[in-house]
Image 1: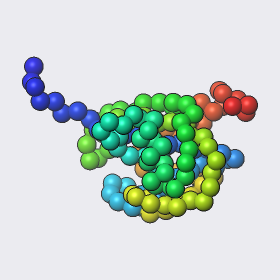
Image 2: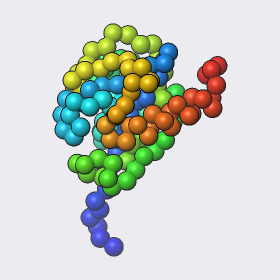
Image 3: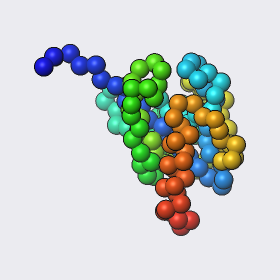
Length: 141
């Protein structure tokens, strides 16, 4: 067996849905420049996926939130045109505040769920999964 591995990148995505709207960022850079996507990005060394999603959310939107539930793990060699990537997607909760787009985000907005398409990467699939999860959990959660 080779001592050199080529592993996929590990990323996180923050899915925050509230009052019929979803938090999205407009991508400032390729790939998918100008398209809407979930706040998220690459996990850094010595960081958990939970820490990474909180950090990416803050960097790209200025909001503080916390992971409430795991939506899913998304993997495959074709998910990201830059390189193979595995993403851990979380439902996010917290107190929304003033949006301050930053880092890799050209903009940030609470977008009505019905208007939240098309999305970059496979975020449309993630959004469908998040909505199914919320429907199963019921209105009290």
